[in-house]
Amino acid sequence: MVERTLSIIKPDCVAAKNAGKVISMLEENGFNIIGMKKIHLTKKQAKKFYIVHKDRPFYDSLTDFMSEGPIVVMVLEKENAIADYRKLMGATNPEEAEEGTIRKLYGSNIERNAVHGSDSEESANYEIKFFFNELELV
Ligand code: RTP
Ligand code: MG
Image (cartoon, rainbow, N blue to C red; front, side):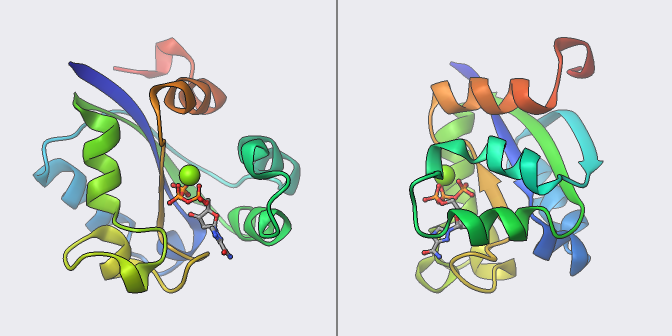
């Protein structure tokens, strides 16, 4: 089944000029980029985006990080996009991520881990709508 998922290249990865390499990896792995933009979230917007984590101890630090600089947000389309992109990203903690994954290659630590990906169909729907309207998806 063809699915859509939301990908974010996080501020650490954009600042390190690794965004292009991540985009190449997505293309090489069969993802169609059907929407893409570069934006700089405010703290308030980051808190809204990560509202599911509001009770976690890392919520404040995570939302500071996600609003510290520009990010690249993309909608990816492919069969099994949600699970396949999670696999390509690797584990949340780059130290535990498999060789060749985006987080292993470009992540620094459990927070500054280069990329985000939706974890379910429900969160993909919420996250895609958060950043894009249907006219922006090609
Ligand atoms: P993401 O949502 O960004 O794709 O990452 P994920 O599913 O692998 O991890 P999740 O549990 O949803 O956590 C969201 C993001 O919060 C930061 N984090 N920090 N300090 C910590 O222990 C900690 N744990 C998570 C990471 O930036 C993680 O990607
Ligand atoms: Mg998550």
